[in-house]
Image (cartoon, rainbow, N blue to C red; front, side, top):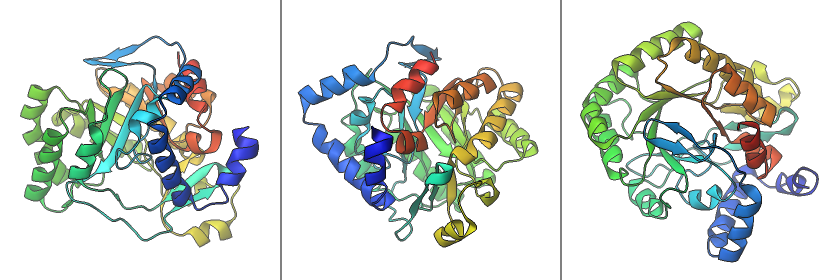
Amino acid sequence: MYKSIFRPLLFQIDAEDIHNKIVKSLQFYRHLTPVRKIVRSSCHTETAEWKWKNLTFKNRVGLSAGFDKAANCFDELSDLGFGFIEVGTVTPKEVKGNPCPRIFRLPKDQALISRTGFNNPGKTVFLQNLKRKQPGKYILGININTNHPDNTEQAMTDILDLYHTFDRYADYYTINWGSIAPEILGPILSTLLQDKQAYKKPVFLKLPADLTLEKVDDIISFAIQHHIDGFIACGPSQDRSLFTHSTQTEIKNIGAGGISGLPVLQKSTRIVKYLSEHAPKEMLIIGAGGIITPSDAQAMLKAGAHLVQIYSAFIYEGPYIVKQIAKACR
């Protein structure tokens, strides 16, 4: 029903506009307790819990960062069956992001192109929203970044500030590889190590999809040196050759932006497999990027991922895809 009736209607509206409307609808849905009980009972599936260190995941399916950028509706989204949800990216100070329109669909390729620019409301609003977290209901990750990526001292202050500010609510943190230069990120992580040992909140690196395997080797070495706890592979790609169905005119008219969705699957699976074979076994690997169907998720687990994250699947397949993938990942 979603793909035949609702999706065609939703896709008539600008991607970011409909996204904002969905977020507002979820905030209204927050107060409909009887409806929420029905949704939870229909969307959740019985799966064995999966444990890693001090974290217990209800199932292996998570929602990627970028959907709930401001932590507006993560608790409501958990009703749909996610075992873990990642919110953000958040920075200490508000970021308006790039001009709209900045999110585009390419349905023929089941892809999205985005150039939002880390838009977020800043830590004060974000922290207020985090107070709705329900302990024990799901694992909550927070994707954090700095307002000063080119300044070591200021970037360090930003990251440490966010790590401490959200400690009560975060189960893990993620930093996007490439958003902060390695020569700046290294000292930040070295300083953060003492706090990590005290607070027991792991830090993951989210890798972009266009890395060469030689570069992945360098990142693994960096991660070991700086006591990174795991990887999320992968984020968006810039490789326009991945499109096989959309026309060059469609792609050119959209312009710049990172590609997510099905076209990224092969790249992300390749990097997950390499991480599984070459990274220390105690590191957590979350497969992300291009997972649309249950079989895509199974392939990602077979490649070596411990968990999976989705985003585009939610857009193209609808909310019940979470339950389907969770069943496939049992």
